[in-house]
Length: 188
Image (cartoon, rainbow, N blue to C red; front, side):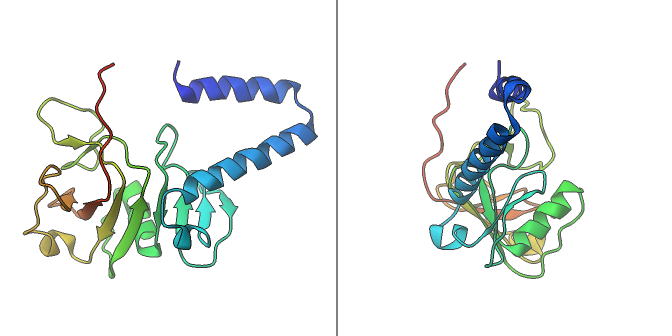
């Protein structure tokens, strides 16, 4: 049984027997854990004053520095990230499959790494043989205005040994800057 469904069962059962006061305490504890997880995605000098927002858009803590940190990108995607305003606009466009058209450089931190992603196709969800899938370790992502033109001469090879372009030749192209090792692949 995967973690998501196990937690759903556990939390559903707890809700049936817990008093409202206990549930309020549990929500505070859960919020504190989500906030800590979100803050782990980026540098402390950014995360300490960042807005903390869950993947459903609910604000867990207001911020004051223009950054937004999230404990995950969605259900089952337990990868925290911290984004500046430009990157948050990029994510909004991506979610609606619209061209982001950034007018300034945008920065995102993912010090906890990422899930497996097709390096060429931003909307591919199946790992077919021969496709360039990568599970990046800790990294920084950078978006730039006019990425298709600006990044045309930069490699999109995630194994080249340095920064590379993810989603090259698409409006979602951005620079990936690895800052630590990738997770070791394990056979299940």
